[in-house]
Length: 109
Image 1 (tube, rainbow, N blue to C red):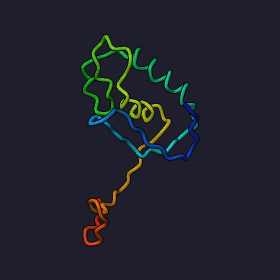
Image 2 (cartoon, rainbow, N blue to C red):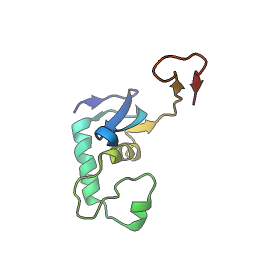
Image 3 (cartoon, rainbow, N blue to C red):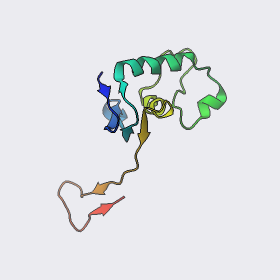
Image 4 (cartoon, rainbow, N blue to C red):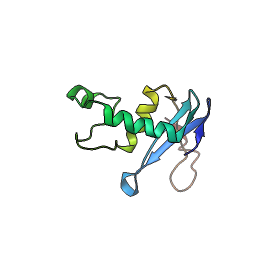
């Protein structure tokens, strides 16, 4: 992993095939080393007591069985936000059409 610097914009992705996911964009709020934070993330997951309130927390995706020692990959963004490393950014998307650009269909969401 690499290091991330204040002000950089990042996205996250994971999964494969039909389970592929993307998150972001995020803005880096403080410098961090990816390898060190990855270990911090796994340690936090292993040491966090699992309670019903914790499982229902909309900002946590650590909803894994109690015997799992590795968190779901898509829980990383929530950990980074809660730890003050990144912040979510609001963005808009432009739909440029299907296979061919259609100026009549150009819309933003």
